[in-house]
Length: 130
Picture 1 (cartoon, rainbow, N blue to C red):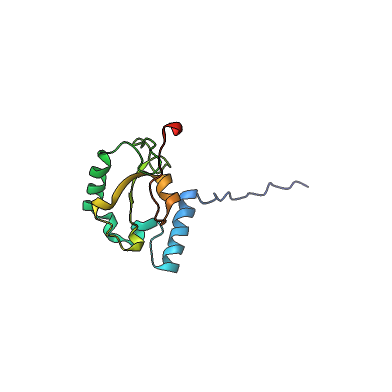
Picture 2 (cartoon, one colour):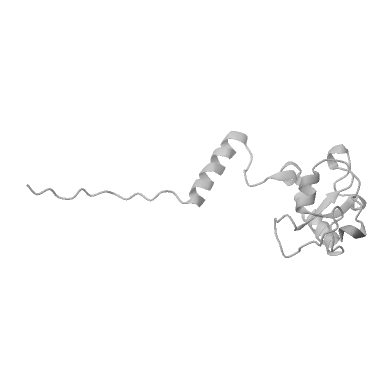
């Protein structure tokens, strides 16, 4: 006896973008915060103002090397361990003002992240390390 083929409806799996939107919506319902805002700027709204970003950009234009390791800052990279960031000599968690430019030093994103909130001195770069 002839049996017609079973028609299957192909339902496409949700795309990665749709899954990300779903996760973000669930996170927003659960925490009341938007998931895309992360890091210090997510906790400190004054660090995402136009004035702060402008001052940070102007500050970083004057430097070519990381304060902590002495390596060259790579301005062509974004969110990479060698990309430039502003680090604070005296940490904001200790009580320093995050907008005080005399407390700012240029640093690689990797150096800044690995240093975290540790209050340390600058590593001495000797000629044998060149």
